Amino acid sequence: MACTTVLVGKKASNDKSTMIARTDDGFFDVKKLVVVEPKKQPKKYKSVISHLEIELPDNPMRYTASPSVDKKNGIWAATGINEANVGMTATETITSNPRVLAADPLVKYEKAKSRKEKDKIGGIGEEDIVVLVLPYIHSAREGVERLASLLEKYGTYESNGIAFNDVNEVWWLETIGGHHWMARKVKDNEVVINPNQFGMDSFDLEDAFGKQKENMCSKDLKEFIKDNDLDLNEKGVFNPRFIFGSRSDSDHVYNTPRAWFMGRYLTPFSHKWEGPDAEFGPESDNIPWSLVPDKKVTVEDVKYLLSGHYQGTPYNPYSSQDTGKRGMYRSIGINRTGVMAVCQIRDNVPDEIKGIEWVCFGSTAFDALLPVYTNVKKMPAYLSKVTLDASTEDFYWGSRLIAVLADHNYATCIQHIERYQDAVFIEGRKLLIEYDKKMIKSKNYKLTEEANEKLSAMAKKETIDTLNKVLKDASTHMKNGFNRADN
Image (cartoon, helix red, strand yellow):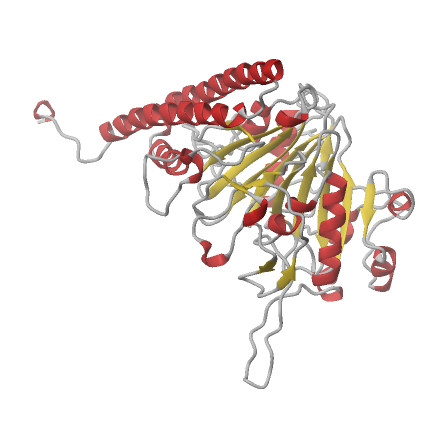
């Protein structure tokens, strides 16, 4: 699935929180935000796509999830935070190369060709990973370890990147072929930017095969590389992107421009991104996977990055100027996004309210990002009671309706969109501040559900108000408009 990921270390953020965020860019998948109680977690999991059956541990924790409303292709839980305040987003579909995939083929389901044969069961994939991992982990590192054990045992049918965070650490795992993997802890003062490519551009093998402080990988990774002549590096440098990743013409249109836009925003002063002497351009293959930002990063910054459509560049598809380059690169905030979530684990509050999930639905260029507390037993109906039918009674469809109307009337509607996004941020933060204080003072942390209801009601009010405005604006630009005075 085509997605974009941003990861923020605790010293890179403005409030010492860790953040992991991803656009879940499917095929206009209808999504909702729910809480999965332990009693609702299956004892035996069966994948729809790969037909794999897995026995699950007996001690699941409560967790949030953003599953697909239509279950025909499985759960696709996407992202969430569990009751141990561990966040997870899965998955970022990444690239590989023929050498890797030949040496360790993907484990794909194959239906038997005759009654005498048995189906070939597939491995795990994006449909499954959150449900198989998030309810059972108590730290980001544990997330890497559990997922790694599943990959080694069952394999995977696709190449993926998966992120985990807790109050102190952010970890990123990338799959290699069908059964191999490597993972890195994001440095506390850095931000990771990852479009749909194998991302890591450095890795400490000595640490991975030693103390594993910041690096982990498959136990046989060295032998795998050597036995299959995968190492393309020179002069003793170990760049995993060269070994396991891709460098194709389609990358230069679809992937690297997104990294360029995000890097340009994060480090406008410490790196040169434009002009004849630029360090990195939209089609550069050496754009860093992680950067030390020029200023502290906020949730609002993450939302801006994941809403990007090359604003301020010749590539902006909404530009009124005919630059000859409009729309030539794949935007970050695209039309088919189902959900985008920022899993934020805060450091400056009690454990009961550390987890905040910021969620928006539909095209991120036009929707608003709403915070909710994750230490709850249920989510408000406006977020969780979503159906396959278009409606103004839930956040998903309200967001989709606003986006499709504003897209076709961008020049006149963008002011409504900006005011809408700011209003939800402002009022959302106000309510977080209010309820943080209430709960810390009273030690009544059951108020999280009351807070979420107020947050949801606010989002509904702002969404309906904005929908009214963009609908009226779009109506005035219909092609069949006519007045007697026009004659």
